Length: 114
Image (cartoon, rainbow, N blue to C red; front, top):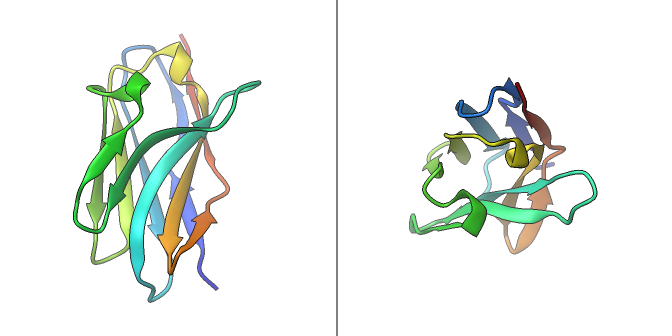
């Protein structure tokens, strides 16, 4: 069974940086991977995504601060988050699109606070 596992969350001060990792296990064909986040009382929103040809898309609130990259040989993606703000506090979820199905991870908490 395919699993999507995130890591790298934690507590960081405003203005700091954090790097999240996500890996889809198993010998599967992943067409896209991305990050979404959900803050308390808010809807889940797209943070960043990358598709098989390397094209990327970012949510408006993170453009210029966050960067998504991938290790395509390992079905792994990274989210480099810079200039973090308290508003970035949320549970960050990784999603992998595998054979047309979206597989979600359990999420990792990012807290931006002094």
